[in-house]
Length: 368
Ligand code: FAD
Ligand code: UDP
Image (cartoon, rainbow, N blue to C red; front, side, top):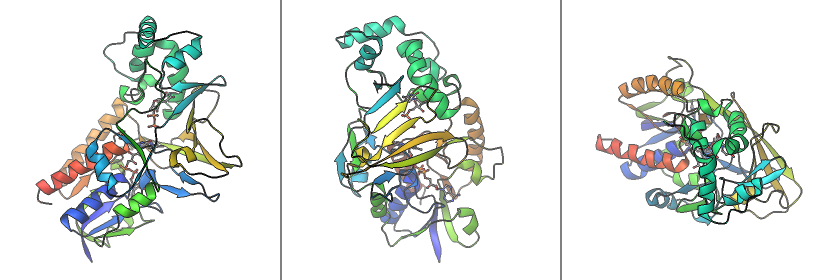
């Protein structure tokens, strides 16, 4: 059997690409995935206590793109869900992103309006220009004390780097609010797939044109499979056998625990922003999935270097190394590099989808 496309990886990038090529171009595809399941990092499954869990950390779908939302709506119904996070500091819980409530509680202030909050922050914020790193972007908005309390230690634990060493893009993901809005995201569309992500992926990949091979590293089957083109969504350095050296990716060890109580947290996610507690965040999965059950499952996240490559690490040095690989990648006419690992970019799911849909358009424009 000869395939038109070999797609490496069954995460968002690989699955969206497979779905488009199968349904729009009617071409034959083999997807090869090294893990035991489809869905990539968005994979969810029932644990042994019957609780639906996000195996690789909380995946909250949020987007301002109607195009992305409409695209995914073909494969799932939705449940409205707005994510909330509390930061734990010295035993107290504070809204994060920092907002009016955070400031009043932390400093015993009585800021009453958005103007009060703006005026207060004006007295503490700093002026680091140009904005070169993740420390600059935060101290410019909220000053040093709030940076130290909410960002410095959490970031060090998450990345094993100082915020000064990371691109502004990392801590810049977190806004600062002048009002009482405690939502983590403010995007127009904030929904979770009603039956979970894995079910949504199953529907996307249900096609006579798509064959899925699980538990296989693509390199082990390359000699046996005939194909015209490859879509590669794995780590780009691995593709080139680390020719220029390893690109660092950050991983996480997830510690799951089922607790015989209906709920344990007030919200889905609690961030331990101090250095004393080793894990970064604790997630209570039923908030994410909307499941009703007598017990609850939580997971704690311990960042580490070894393990599945979850996060590209946005530093100047890594960017330069990536660009060397990108030059090589562009020379290969029958391989398309696509996704968070292959493009070494800290993309959210909706960005991956928008990006993959646009790469698909290029594939059509270039005559498949
Ligand atoms: P992946 O999901 O990593 O898929 C790549 C696939 O390729 C994997 O399944 C991998 O096993 C496979 N693969 C790799 N190498 C090989 C090989 N050699 N052979 C065969 N297969 C291979 N985004 C959001 O929008 N909202 C969130 O709340 C959110 N939370 C996140 C929380 C965590 C802890 C993490 C790590 C990410 C989160 N994301 C979130 C980002 C989201 O996971 C990514 O945007 C998305 O999964 C990227 O899709 P992808 O297909 O590029 O990569
Ligand atoms: N961050 C922080 N304190 C927080 C939340 C986030 O310092 O309470 C920083 C940290 O460096 C983190 C980054 O902001 O890696 C982005 O946070 P986000 O919640 O978007 O991380 P993700 O969900 O992608 O892991």
